[in-house]
Amino acid sequence: MCRHSATVCLVKSSLLSGCSRLPLAERLIRLPDPRCRRGRRHPFVSVLLVAASAVVAGARSYAAIGQWARNAPQEALARLGARLLTSLNVRIAPSAATVRRVVAAVCPGGLADLTGADPSGAESVAADGKSTRGSRHSDAPAAHLLAAMTSDGRTLTQLRVPDKTNEITCFTALLEPFALAGIVVTADALHAQHDHAVFLVEVKEAHYMFTVKKNQPTLHERLRTLPWERATAKFYDRSLGHGRRETRVVQVLTVDELDFPHAAQAAKITRHRTSLKTGKRTRETVYVITGLTSRQASPEKLARLARSQWVIENRLHFVRDVTFDEDRSKIRTGRGPENMATLRNLAINTLREHGHTNIAAGLREMSLRTLHPAPRHPGRNSVTSNDTKVKGLCNSPGDRARRLHFIGSVRPQHVISLRECSNRSHPRLAEILTHPPMGSIFS
Image (tube, rainbow, N blue to C red; front, top):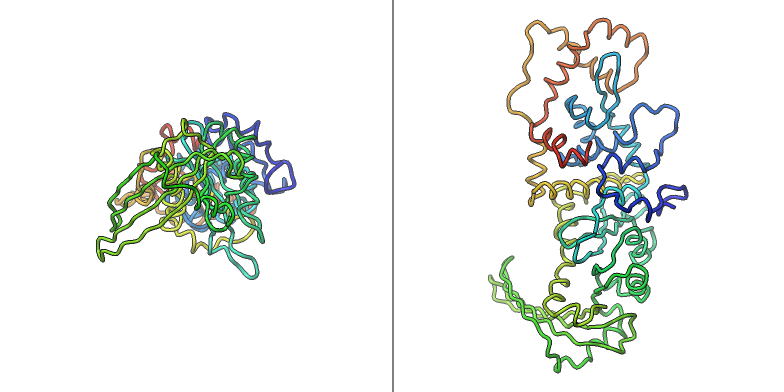
């Protein structure tokens, strides 16, 4: 059953096995079309592919996606499986309204799972939540999304946390579809729960590493009173950057009776920071528990795993906030907020897979247009004057008499030439859309 709907959407365990190796189009076929059977004009998968391609090019709203689709060349629309008008041999892009209806209605759990990465081979997976502030309206709170990301910056999936609850209720559902055997799952203090530890170790055969703070007062007090002065396993890490000098001291103790499921080690991480501008010094102490034994994880590895929790903040939440301006997005109806966030996650994954370490620079490269004006044939002014008719034909059904009149007055090759010349995208975007390995994703 789908995690967000009462209708059968996809069976998680069987359909996700080996699914990440398939092209995106073949993965999206597994999703049910939420539209009524009557009146469908655009293929369901094609609409999702057009929306994903537009977000890769920097689109932030439904209107921007519709604008990108109108300006997409015929070659790109053909590869994305757009609707074909056989009488003119022209691909018709879905309108912004069509994109909005599909994105706002498609199953968010299935879309996030099928467009996410495969965690196999990753050292750790970090789970953390983020609110999309712009989705708040009337009495409804902003959508809060719980996501999971690997230590190398690949987003696995995400879930919308139900209103009037918190991330704790969605933790197991978030990670249930994936094979996590041997992987370390890191999370903040909110998820230092007995049930989560049992789920990870006994059900998923994974390891955990949780931060412990004063929201768990008993557990925090027990960790604080451990004999840390006897700890012989230590690790020192020093870094310089972001206007400060930081020294991290990691002390590790083996624990037996901590009253926490499968707890094997506890770590005390002390951070000493010095501001390079003011010289002010601060100290922060954090306690961590893990199911990894001393043979499985040294103090150095525990320090690396503790820092990997920040990957999801720096490489996902920060990018969506700053680069995609997600907090100011006014998409708020239906399942639009979570599905648009999923498309942004897909864009980030795709750009990183193609070597873009700077997501903002990658979006700018994808959104560039040719600097030269589109060529126009001197003898085809009539076709140029019919530009609005072409747009109307490609974005609304119209009546039969108008179509027959228009088809009789303009030859098909004129219409194709008009679209290819006036809506020419940047060559790099066309290459990304058509050249492997992107071709295996968006084709």
